Length: 196
Image (cartoon, rainbow, N blue to C red; front, side, top):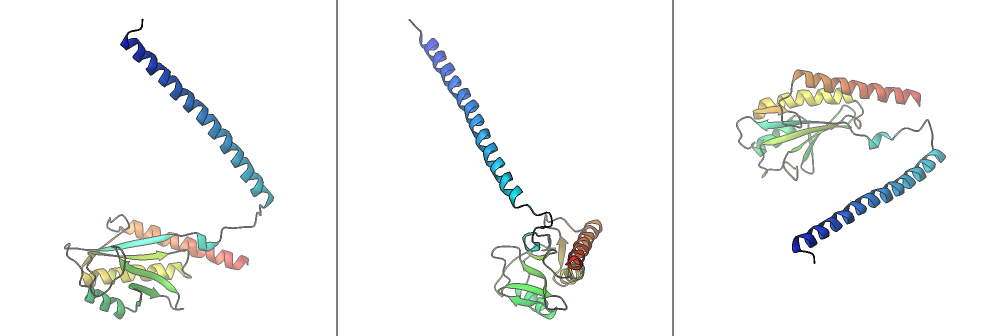
C-alpha cells in the first residue's frame, strides 16, 4: 500500500511530465506554424518586390520635442501664455498654437504637456511642449532654428527651463545633434526632389 507522501510524489511527477510535454509540443507546433506563415509572406513579397520603391515620406516621423517647465514649480499664467503666443505670431488652432514658416506651412506646434494638450484661458499647467516633425515640414533646418529661437524667447518671458522629452535640460551637444539631423533630412529631401 502506498503512503500519502508516495501518492503525492507520484502526482507531482505526473504533473511535471504533463507540463514538460505541453511546453515541448507547444513550441514545436508554434515554430512550424510561424515558419509556414513567414515563408508564405516572403513569397508574396518576392512577387511584388520593386527595388525602386521607397517608403512614403508620410509614414516616417522624426519628432523633436522640447518641454518648457516652470522654474519655480508654479503654474504658468494662461492669459500671459496665450497673449505671448499670439504676439509671437502663432495661430490658435483648437487650443494648440501653431507657428508657420514663410510659405504658411506648419513649422511646429506648442501644446500643454498635460492631457488633453490644449491651452485655454482656464488652463493650469507647469509645462508646455514644442513639437516638430522634421519629416513633415518643408524646410527642416529653418523650422528647427525657428523653434529653437522661439523656445529661448518663450522660456525667458515665462521663466521656464527648456528640457528635452525626458525632462532633462537641453545641452549644446544635443541641440547640435538635432541640427545635424535636420540638415540630413533636408539634404535627403532635396535629393529625392532632384531625382524626380
